[in-house]
Length: 275
Ligand SMILES: NC(=O)c1ccc[n+]([C@@H]2O[C@H](COP(=O)([O-])OP(=O)(O)OC[C@H]3O[C@@H](n4cnc5c(N)ncnc54)[C@H](OP(=O)(O)O)[C@@H]3O)[C@@H](O)[C@H]2O)c1
Image (cartoon, rainbow, N blue to C red; front, side, top):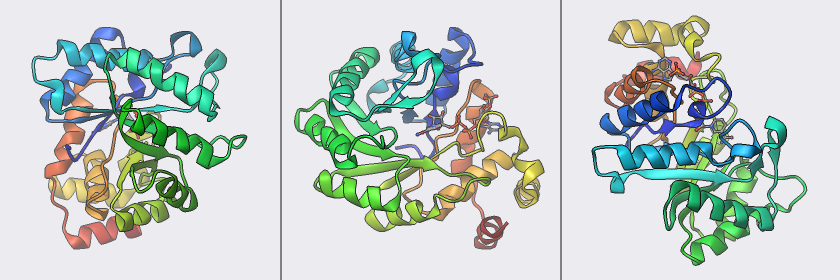
């Protein structure tokens, strides 16, 4: 797995680029060595086009000149988009149907990594996560993950899945550090931790340096962008961390991928963590 993944959400939600730019962004990520692409059935404008992002990724993988067999596409189920709103449905009925629809949208026989998108307060967590176990057993998905989970839910999912939970995807960025207990727990359990919104989201990603001076200073010392420093800092926190920065054009994902080669000193990591 590449140390940096591509978060593909920006290619399908409001403000998205056109199809060709979306494909070019995914191709740029793949050309730069990215082997993890994060998506979800709910990355679309509304439920009239559920699976938009998955279909785009499927098309981009098929038209790419390289070998896509090493690329892990991680999708999710559990969110629905009536009239563009973000709502949850963690019922077993919905998750089974959502997985079938994702298989079709991606054009694959088995999904590499399937993540339960967000806990649904109206459905016992074990019931939602239990569906992932059934999908693993049926060979519909190769690996199972969860997202937006707290430490208790991570432990519960690990138990429900009989030790087969491989990843947790939570919000984590210089501006949002409250998922640190989950990051530490994943480190302890040897489960991948995928920080989502690692640069603070599309509307604030450009402000990493202006909002967090330590990130700007370290960036200037290395001659790189503050965004690259943010990603390198996360990578330095634990070997289980795989950030999935979003991108809607080739140049930003290319800059983000270079974070894997940026070596921060222990002092710099400490300073960034304390900032
Ligand atoms: N599990 C969940 O509930 C959940 C929720 C939200 C997101 N996610 C996942 O996490 C991914 C990332 O989150 P996000 O896209 O919301 O936020 P983000 O990664 O924090 O920010 C994305 C923005 O950062 C900019 N950017 C990326 N790399 C950059 C660089 N090196 N220098 C300067 N700007 C850079 C991009 O600009 P350009 O657009 O100009 O390229 C993009 O608009 C999503 O794509 C999605 O896969 C998951």
